[in-house]
Length: 195
Image 1 (tube, rainbow, N blue to C red):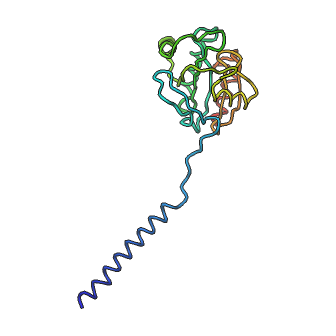
Image 2 (cartoon, rainbow, N blue to C red; image 1 turned 60 degrees about the vertical axis):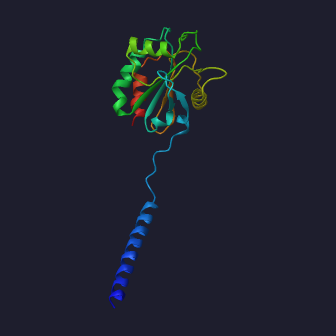
Image 3 (cartoon, helix red, strand yellow; image 1 turned 30 degrees about the vertical axis):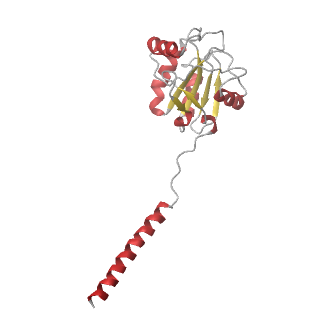
């Protein structure tokens, strides 16, 4: 008799556990809030300037991104200072500046990765992300610059050309080299892209 009274109890415990498992399974299959999808414009990978570590630009999803092709020996090289100041001011608000050293214009970036990285840090204290030297103009340009030119219809024509991508991944502005990082038009575009 005792056997018969414990059997239903054991059965109840099994069914209770089974029910809990089904509940957990149902919870696990409930729709989750999806992570923000990486916009097409950021679906590129490059090596980091300092150490060649691979960098997927999708890590900047949800941020405003200012993309700049840089050179160490150009009349516009002093813009590094303004770019770093802009980055320092708006980084906590969601801005990232991405530097792409390039030797395409006037052969003004002849150095290797270590030389460029040392110059950027020692001369201008650059802390914003810098990617390895690449082609940004003409045949063989890197995949991001192909996409930026397609989105704006404006190719980079010299060092320190700037493209601005908003938080949603839309390319919203293109600025020629002559537009400095402190220019009110550029600052206004950045603050708007951060909203």
